[in-house]
Image 1 (cartoon, rainbow, N blue to C red):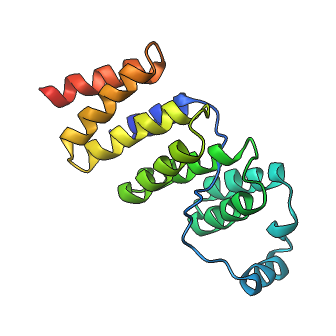
Image 2 (cartoon, rainbow, N blue to C red):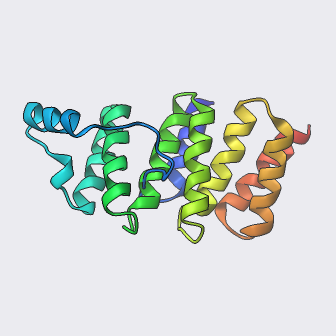
Length: 170
């Protein structure tokens, strides 16, 4: 079942992500300087494309804290970057993938709040429904899937939401 969930997220679209505005992890300048010295990669001097590449690289490595740091820097320096929403989505996806549903929901909600017209908005909304379902919050999952169908009719996520609703209503 986990592989189906992962496949659905990968099919949702290309990864272009951004970090949440309400990002709570504080990354001190000393910590970033030490990290740059140890790794030879100073993320504070990267442009938004490089930071996005760093987010994807850290996602592939499974290093959540490095992915969060890169996203935090991106949101702080390049909030209007075309990659910002995608970085938030990948953080949410990564959290849900690891069973941290509440954290994933926060990233998806931030994406929807800060980037409502994003190409990842429908994916984030659908992912919220999946997270609610996995948390055994059927009513919230149903409400979210109905919302996806109503707001994004004809989208792939709308058809997936229809299938999810059939499974929930059983």
